[in-house]
Image 1: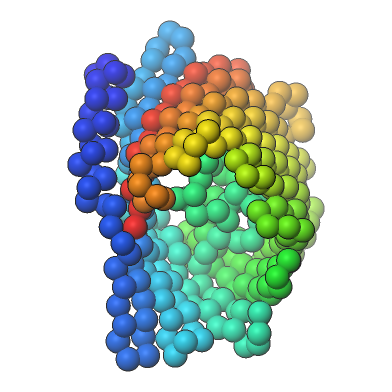
Image 2 (image 1 turned 45 degrees about the vertical axis):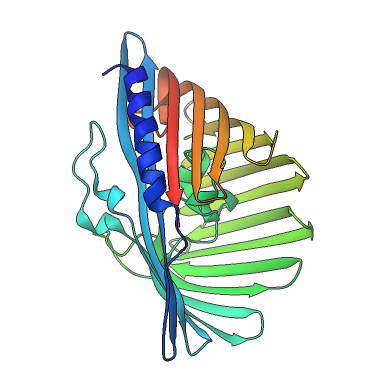
Length: 334
């Protein structure tokens, strides 16, 4: 199927699906229980160009279903599944059914501004990794985030928030509950963030894994600012896994031409190992178009990839590869 025909198919699908998904979040209340349902659906049309072959295909990237709420006001609970995680990507094996389970847990505030959370969720590491999928500026998260932080882990998190700063620390197993690995608490992730003014923040994190930074260590810094229509973010991370040292950097610049239209540029650099004298590089130019508040969104992005490949539309490091990637994404959320 030609890529242009895929665009037509996606356009029709956008209109029909948008009608169905652009609704308010269903809520319920029963005695001491309160809750609501949220959902996010994202469909990609992908064009992956690498001489001498080109590939065009569709991919359901996200299909998140979330239940969250409270019990007796103070207790909080949450559960999220993503059936899209069960879909087999081109050239890969069938994922295990446990991949669909994303987040689950309960939280309780023992004191003002303080909260304890137990369950499976994202560790407090990179800034972009903690962003909700519905608020991403481009269809896919940066390679830096997906390497270091796009995962859920089983553990215990302590968090404290003030008006201009917050800190969170999580003791975790380092793997999701569905992994066929040891489920012992062995990783400590701590993140602090300062907000000097509204819509601006400076953050840092450190990870000590397997009770030894030399065995598994991470640290990173990030900066974000927004001034009227202008947005800027930058993030740097270094990782250590035994003798292997990795590092990555990403920055995004966006400008809202009007309330519903934002062009954005992202630069990514990633080195998987100091012994490899080559770094992956991605330059992406994208456009966000808001169709209905934040419920419906179209995103288009074109990327020039050096020493990166994108077998399913999500770039990964691949020494010697040179790709051109185009992704159009329709997103509906409630």
